[in-house]
Length: 143
Image 1 (spheres, rainbow, N blue to C red):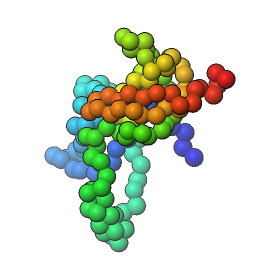
Image 2 (image 1 turned 180 degrees about the vertical axis):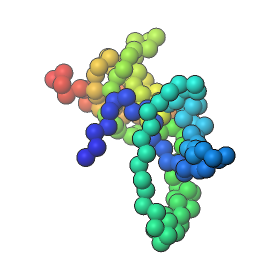
Image 3 (image 1 turned 90 degrees about the vertical axis):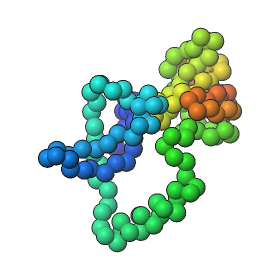
């Protein structure tokens, strides 16, 4: 099993393309808009192969066209109201609430969270660039 480091900033799928003798992977605009990546910074990139036989590709393309109607786009927040998930509180905000980041650097503000805590939270309100959550199970290490 692959160990995923805490420094992982972003995960997305992209196609490798040839342009003017170089090979390019386009970064989705949403990765920049959600502060997962910053222009003019240097990043380590891991490339994972996908299955690519012709039959599988046709099935995958069919699945993607069907799924596009029901799955959120990468521009949508990566959390939903009522969702319960584990987070790590990184810092506190101006109102002394905990601040956690999830996929694509999306911010979750956790009432009562303290830096270093790893509580289970319930997402109560979702906005385009931030969500608000409450703790449903405190950090098990603190018990």
